[in-house]
Length: 169
Image (tube, rainbow, N blue to C red; front, side, top):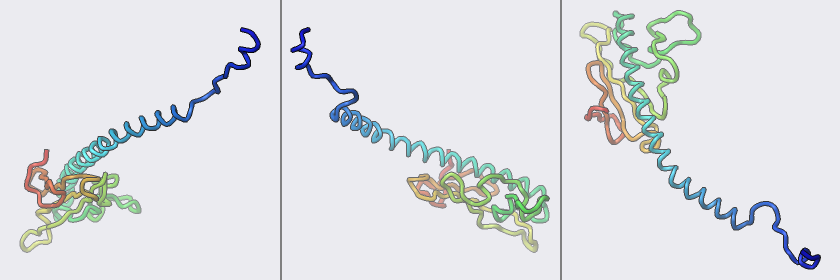
């Protein structure tokens, strides 16, 4: 090459052009728009699975509570199934049978409550209870509500409430 050709030849600058960057960004946006709905569905499914497992853990804790404190029967609060960090020994008010976030009443986008505690006739012993798990935000943290009582399987409410009529699967 002669000197004249070297001067007129334009060198390409290092890096990407604005057009190349815009194309890459638009492709990334399209991929994100496709991925976000699937992520939300997976999160809802995981929260619902966690809620059903948590209800199973509450059922097991209730059975152990009933055996440990036969004069009390079942626990009527989640706090009674949890542990009091200020005490070293378990009591009927804080048995330590549930661990983690569950005794606080919220876990994985669901709110858990124990209701409808029924006492035996002429006694203070609690013989039945109901546990409900409802999403904190229907369709965002979960689609279905779940219910459990002392004698049955976990049931679901497809609308996210506590009117549980379908067997949960």
